[in-house]
Length: 111
Image (cartoon, rainbow, N blue to C red; front, top):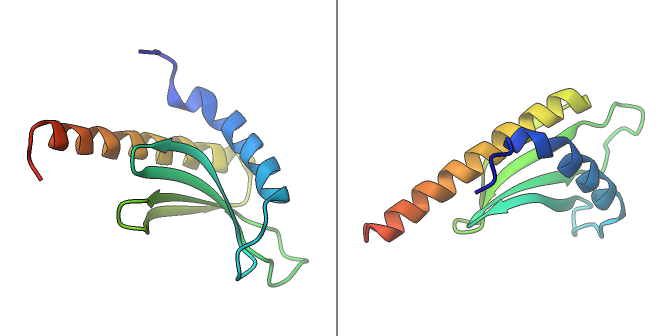
């Protein structure tokens, strides 16, 4: 297993995700979503919403999403890259933890 800290990869994941979300096709409501990291049923996603006021600073929205329940578990709104990187690190760590807990439960035969 790699000993690299998850935070070591958060900034490049976020940067690549930001470039991808800019060219992604919008959903019916005008929002765009790209995955930054996925661990089992848990996905850390970057969201871009259609701005209500183009003069307002555009926040960076991040979400921890469960494909199993089809719902967001946690989300963060950031207005600068440093905060977004820290939030990405947190959500990736949480996704890993939830996936490991889910794997242990499945492997132990507990539902």
